[in-house]
Length: 84
Image (cartoon, rainbow, N blue to C red; front, side, top):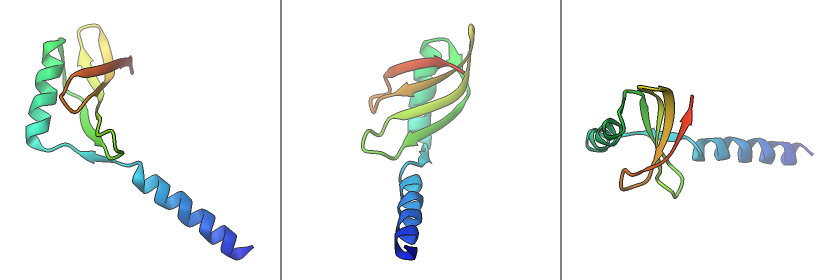
């Protein structure tokens, strides 16, 4: 029983670490900024998903029509925009 509990805790912790996002480097940040400016938005917090997709995320970007979160692909094309 104790071994099963320890295994479950270790599995849960390793899964949460694997799903963490990583900071964006300066070159990628400039490309994300340009993509956002092209649609009239700016700012926000930039991150890259560490899963196999490598999708970029922007949280809390300010746009003319409100505040939004964005997802961008590896080519910095906007995949989606959602109201924050």
